[in-house]
Length: 374
Image 1 (spheres, one colour):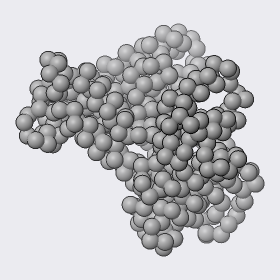
Image 2 (tube, rainbow, N blue to C red):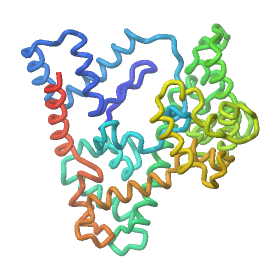
Image 3 (tube, rainbow, N blue to C red):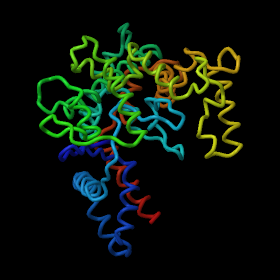
């Protein structure tokens, strides 16, 4: 469950995963006595107060520690090898713990509406889920098959990307003219221009310069009508280029520019691992070689061609949706008939959409776990 608080340009998202981080911060701040911890836990048992506290604390912490590094504006983070992180990268953490927020957003198609569901009483959550289930049922047979559920999840992924891009658009559109200029974007991300539109700062770092050039290239590609601005629809392509077909040529071009050291238009294994090889051991190299050979080099010629490069850099929402469909079926198909009845879905409402009651129990349990670890 994620909640956001915004002060200035800082938008803080708080979820159950974040709790452990903040308890570590409390420890750093010398909240170390058992009595202090117990008092803190007692206060935190009120979920509403906890949300407010974490939001304010995170904002204060950022303001105290903020340095002059610039943020990239695209929707998804990049993985170590340069690939866009897949849509389900937060479904399980590094210790393979499952996070139900991903399931809820995959069904509801909106972070904001998923948060609203989490605040509902159980019966209201079930009532609204029943409305969604009827919309999933394309052939009106009162069952949801795998094809119908996967199609719904893909629709949700698209809506989630649009929601993320629209939120970011509002942050960037400083003059509220319903379009984003290059100066508005650069000023927000790199801090080059002042409020008067005059250039006040320069970028000296080579990596920052490269990011700026890449961003300009992406901006121009997303600006389909070439008016020098991004409309809300154009900004969706700019924000999530990996999900827009018209942006794939630019992604490919930039990947080749970064990785194709011998300029043959292909990526060999040495170029695939790049400088990361210096920071890892032999086992990592063997693992990456297996991934290169089995996951991406489909024609087994020892190189990645253009299509293979894109399959590496751009995650497949189709594959993620298939995996999520299998996960939800395994969780809810009690009679194992390979279809979900309305009743099966609504009975497992906590898996599909959650509610205040179910989430609050998890919330308190996680707090106790984190307390025990301190």
